[in-house]
Image (cartoon, rainbow, N blue to C red; front, side):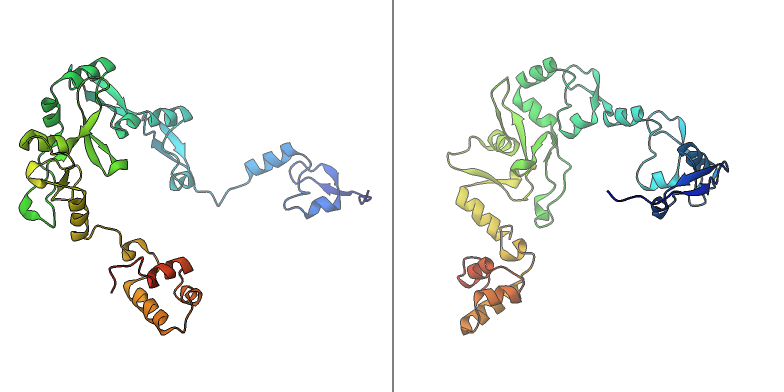
Length: 294
């Protein structure tokens, strides 16, 4: 083991007591100034902190009690609540709502409102509402003052569905068929059946307005899956290279095909030149992608 050097004597800057310390410890920043930890804490507490701005008092966002907060904490997004308890309770905050079945007031937490599950005061009212006529439940969740489609202003405002929306399936609205375990159906399909009769087998209900939550009957029309695809391409909503690629443009694709047809470049060289991959270049020159570019 290496032999440690002889300790040297220093004098504490806080209490003046002499103490011994190894020279190697003096290399650490701030070492060798105080004889003990209590002196270090005491010295730091009494030293002026010119770099820290003085604290201010502000009311707690939950209970309203004034508390001290430093400006640095405000800039970092802290300093909103006076205690950990208020911070935790604020996450469970919500608002008072009225049950559409019994009319009773109930407290709905913010998380349940974000999940669109805070609609009833209890399970019994939820079951009773499901047993009501689907027509009554449908019109309660329709807002007829929706936005007007910018590309088809002659259609008029949309009737927006304010009930449950499934954003994982395109943002369409859903309504229960009634009763427990009977499933759900899309709100715009029910609107079509209510106003125009049953939907023929193999047909889809499409939107003129391109607004999935819309249930206005004159914004809807019938079509099969191929008609749905054709409508998507006609409105330029389908996937294409310019919308999916973050590197290439239409001009880049034309240049890649032109250079490839000269026979003087390999796909690896074209991919390196345009900052793409060999797989993408191969699909471009074989016209398996960017098919809309001549």
